[in-house]
Amino acid sequence: TKQKLWGGRFTGKTDPLMHEFNQSLKYDKRMYAADIKGSIAYAKSNCQKGILTKEEEAKMVAGLNAVLKEWEDGKFVIQADDEDIHTANERRLSELIGPLGGKLHTGRSRNDQVATDMRMWLLDEVNKTEDALKDLLRVLTERADKEMSVLMPGYTHLQRGQPIRWSHFLCYHAFSFASDLDRLRQLIPRISVLPLGSGALAGNPFSIDREFLRQELGFDSIAENSMWGVADRDFIVEFMMWASLCMTHMSRLAEDLIIYSTAEFGFVTLSDAYSTGSSIMPQKKNPDSLELLRGKSGRVFGNMAGFMMTLKGLPATYNKDLQEDKEPLFDTVDNIGASLRIAEGVIATLNIHPEKMQAALTMDMLATDLADYLVRKGTPFRETHHISGRAVALAEKLQIPMSELRLAQYKELSPKFEPDVKDVFDFEASVERRNAIGGPSKEMIARQVRVLREIVAKQ
Ligand code: ARG
Image 1 (cartoon, rainbow, N blue to C red):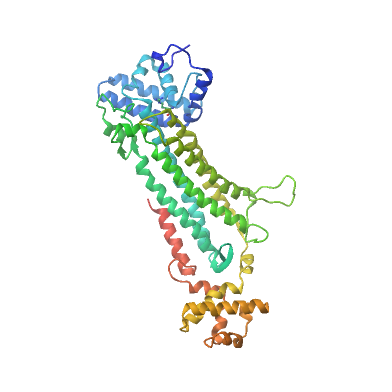
Image 2 (image 1 turned 90 degrees about the horizontal axis):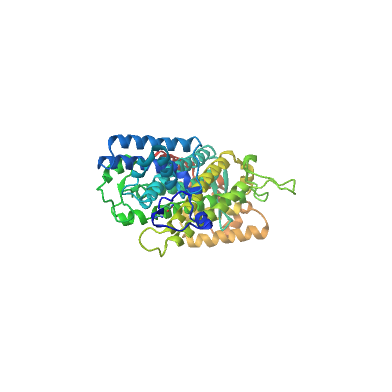
């Protein structure tokens, strides 16, 4: 049998289960393009240092591009002995260009190689994630702009609180995602640090030009300590922390819409495209898309927490434990991407029922406005809160809406009540009175829409 790339000092064979256990190619092959790109830059820099002649460099780059093409065409044939994407690509390169292939790895280790590949691959994925996040933000923002006239109850403790605009609710969730967008952009400089040239741990003995490598591979900066360069996986943890928080926001949005889509609320109906039926109950239309968004938030958090457990307690520098960074990261990237796209689709196709939202508005939700009415007549708020509370209790006792209490009954609670008290009981007016920055008045919703659009457009 053929010798493993590291087989020189070995006389015994690898246990078959151990080979399986050690093998990461089945999942790390998705980094094939980053791996080859890194190797091409590395070959060029080795040529600069006289390790490869110009002709050798050209031959090696052509060989690497041929390997890349095989992957892209689905023609790369994996061999039983291939361990990971790095050994597989190098094995294939040597098959194509002969012993010259063996010069590629001069001064390099899979330790700096894999750290470089992971960072390049993740930078690419962060871009795609950012696009998906921006699309979700756009859908939320455009709906908020269009559906500004729809009123609904705003809740605290899931109890009816004060009237708001449907758009205020949409913008609330959008601002959570806008902060995710901001945080995602802030991760980039810490991912974009070049490990290549760190060697196994103690640096490169052929005074490789790392500044050249940085430019060639498009990194922002260079790992200043070679031990850190090969050992650091904080960028993976940070991305998974980011994803956990973003999924938390997704889960809260999903939970709201699940509640609003029940028959009891009936505020929204999910489109068929994002619902499923029951295998036994013919009437059912279940919000599976939203439930999966809520469910996957747990899984993404688990990926982050699990990998942090792997990291803690590892001695300097590279340890094979670090290979366990891949599956949780890949799973996180896949699930956050899919979740953002699903959320976008759900929001874009959601049917809303403004009449149901309107019908859920009850006069007691204007009790704060009634207290504010007396504040405007000069009564201290703490007093007006009690007076308004007594009005709520009286209406409840008489089983009538607060707006039906007679002026005389109001005057008994406070002499400051006048005929204009009836103006309090208007939901639209209540929402429009909340015209300070952040409020649900039309003007302030328009402002929120504008700010959100600016955040999405920034970069
Ligand atoms: N597949 C390995 C990983 O993902 C590559 C690095 C292997 N390095 C080593 N010294 N065994 O971490």
